Length: 167
Image 1 (spheres, rainbow, N blue to C red):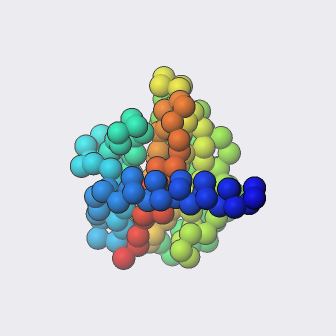
Image 2: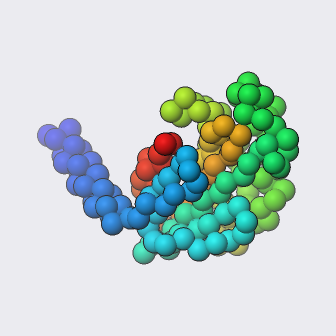
């Protein structure tokens, strides 16, 4: 009985989340990567755009060409990007460049055959939970960040991450 009830609740939640994201729009980050977002994006700066949903969760999309910014080509990144040293350096640089953000440990992994990174933290000015998913394709670093307000479900960030497509 408990299992049946759990499956029923899980199914209802999955349908609710799927319905909530079904009206999201496709956003082409560049020629290689696209993602779904809840509304038309607003430009933050040369590297980032953002979109906000009805729950006030903010979705930030970032793109940095590592060849242009640090001179690292895609061949070098294949091995370098998977090291603990590279991941920690990236985390440290993010922390320095993002005032008000407290980020936890960076976790390296593989996503669709690409090196990826996960971090969680808090954006203290808004007391929002921060979820970051970054991945490297070629010489470009893509970041998908969700800033989830206090007492709001983080299910939107899962749909945001799952919607990322490499062409």
